[in-house]
Image 1 (cartoon, rainbow, N blue to C red):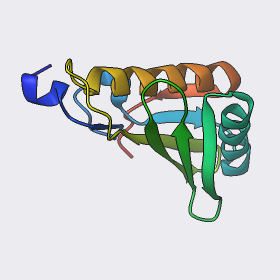
Image 2: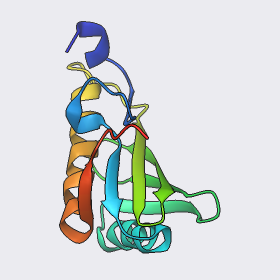
Image 3: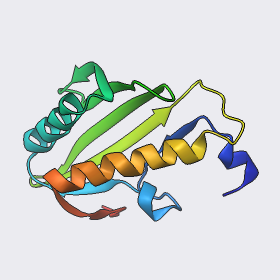
Image 4: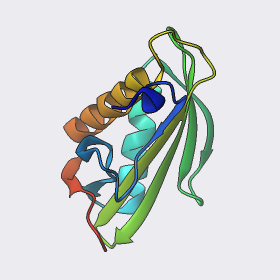
Length: 128
């Protein structure tokens, strides 16, 4: 990780990310099933406060309370009838002398690990 990356105040997953853990994650299920699982996961964890839900646009905006304040945008897209992609964008305005990116990256990884426990994980970064 470069010195410039360490001090970035946002982290996002994407299809072609160089970091394997930050590539788009794919799950087996219908759009509604995966969307509902993500929403349930967020509602059950007291660290998250759902700010806005837009099922028709496939987005949830979420605040992380406690510790370093963060803002998530979770995007859910059906790519096939039983294959759904989940991407995450997380940002913070908080300053850290050691840089915010490692914390943000870890938050994304922890979220995916929680989702992997309740949804059928297919893989990452699958070029369609």
